[in-house]
Length: 148
Image (cartoon, rainbow, N blue to C red; front, side, top):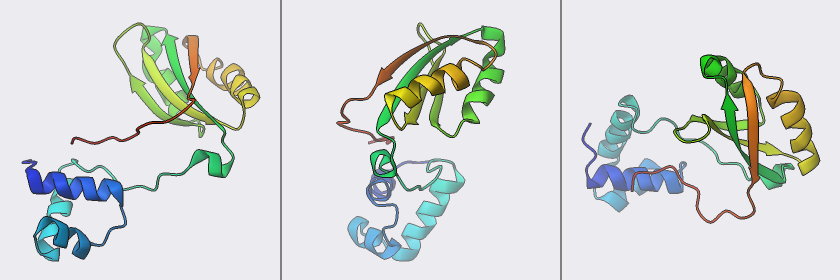
């Protein structure tokens, strides 16, 4: 699918405010509301825009710790480990990576004590997990998944 400058602007506006009315987007990109709706439909059908979601402030709902886990595992058990991780509600991202560890995982915890329990009882209990290196997010400067 062609991602022209207008499509890029539409995507950027939706990333800034996923609830923005089509009429407002249309005014900002110089198209009709119907034309914008059709472009958004095509972007979604072609999987360019996978979803429009609410981004929750984790601290506002009681999760004070954002952690990144680098997980080493038995290579033959990657699918099994990923299925186990994806099933955990505390886990928000599971990526297979190149480099020294196979998986990059993002998760939330209410405290560092809860993170330690989560890792010991939930992560290490997944068959195939060999080692976990954790890092705690101190301050977020930018967080976006875009193609600008």
